[in-house]
Length: 410
Ligand SMILES: Cc1cc2nc3c(=O)[nH]c(=O)nc-3n(C[C@H](O)[C@H](O)[C@H](O)COP(=O)(O)OP(=O)(O)OC[C@H]3O[C@@H](n4cnc5c(N)ncnc54)[C@H](O)[C@@H]3O)c2cc1C
Image 1 (cartoon, rainbow, N blue to C red):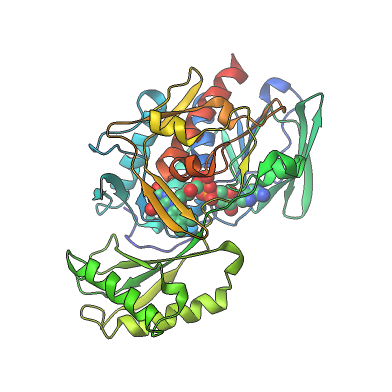
Image 2 (tube, rainbow, N blue to C red):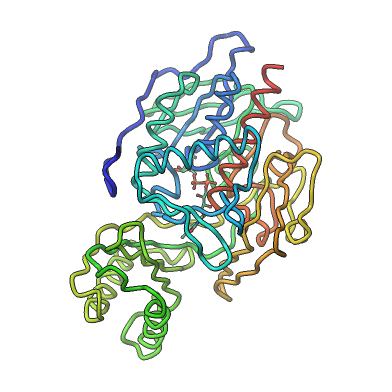
C-alpha cells in the first residue's frame, strides 16, 4: 500500500534516450503529448489495444492537474445515482483506475457533493498509482521532461514530429499525434489559429492538516464561508479570498482551501503571502487552532484553450443529452463554469442526462492524424466547463486511445 498522503515524486523511468521508432511504419508509435488524465488514459488504452505508444510529458513527473494542482474530488466517474458513467472497455479502464486508487489507499471513497458523486482521493496517492500503472505497461515508452517542439504537416495530414528530450532533438513519424497538454500546446505549434483562447478562472489549492475532525461538518462549513465572505468585505482578508471555498479533505484532519483567480493575476509569492495571512486568520477559529499549511498546489488552469475541431461540442448538446454515432465516451457533470467576471455558475443537466463526446470533437479540423483530448477538446466554453472533469478526461483519452489502436492495427 502507498502511504496515505505520501508526497514522493517517483520519476518515470526514461526507457530510452532515443524515441525514434524502427523504420517500419506498422511499428510507428502513437505519440501522446501530456501525461495528465486524458494522456494517461489514451496511452494505456492504446497500448492495451496493441499499439506502441510514446508518451511525452514536459514536467519531471506525471499526473497533470490532479497531482500538481491538488485536485482531491474526481468528478465524471459516477452519475448522480453513483453508477459508473461509462461501460464497455472504456468503462473498464476507468473502473480499474478506481480499483487501483482504492487498493492503494482505503480512504479513497465515493462522496456526494450536491447532486453529484465524486471519488475522494489523495492527489499524492493518485500520482503514485498512475506512475506505477504506466511502468507496468511494456508498450508505453514514457519520457518525462520532454516536449513536442515541432510538427510537420503535408497535404493536410501529420507527416512528422520533433521531440526534445533533455535538450536533444529527435525526429519521428508517428501514426497519430494526440495533444493532451490541456492547453493545446502541440496544436498551437502547428498553427495558433487552430486553438480558441481559454477563458475560465484558474484555481489555487492549499491543504491544511491538523484541523480538528468534523470542523466543516454541516452547518459549520456554511457558517465558515459566510464568515470568510464577511472578513473579505471588512478588509480583514484580501480580495483574493472572496471566492475561497474550504472543503473537507481525504484525511479527517484535512481541509482543502480553493482560491480562484485569473491566470494572468497569478504571482506565486503574493499568493503564498495571501495563504499565510489566511492561515493566521483561520487559526483563530474553532477547530483550526492546530492547523498547519501542509501543501500548496501549482496554479490549476481550468481552460487553457480548446482546439478548433471537426465538431465543436455545444451547451445545447449537453442539455439535450445528445448522442453521436462517433461517440468516444460520455459525460454527465453539471456545467460548472468559472466565468472570469461573473464567478462560478453551476447548472445541473436534467436528471439522468448523459451526453456523448464525438470523435470529431477530438479531431483537429483539417489535419488528418492530429487529435486532442481532455480539457483542450473542441467545445464551447460552457460545454468544456462540464467535459473537463477528471473522469470525463479519462473517458475521452481511453475512448480515443482504443480507437487509434484499432485503426492503426486494423
Ligand atoms: C482549480 C481547479 C479545480 C478543479 N477541480 C476539479 C474537481 O474537483 N473535480 C474534477 O473532476 N475536476 C476538477 N478540475 C478539472 C480537472 O482537474 C482538469 O480539467 C483535468 O485534470 C484536466 O486533465 P487533462 O488531461 O486534460 O490535462 P492536465 O491534467 O492538465 O494534463 C496536461 C499535461 O500535459 C503536460 N504538458 C503541458 N504542455 C506540454 C507540452 N508542451 N509537452 C508535453 N507535455 C505538456 C502538463 O505538464 C500536464 O502533465 C479542476 C481544475 C482546476 C484548475
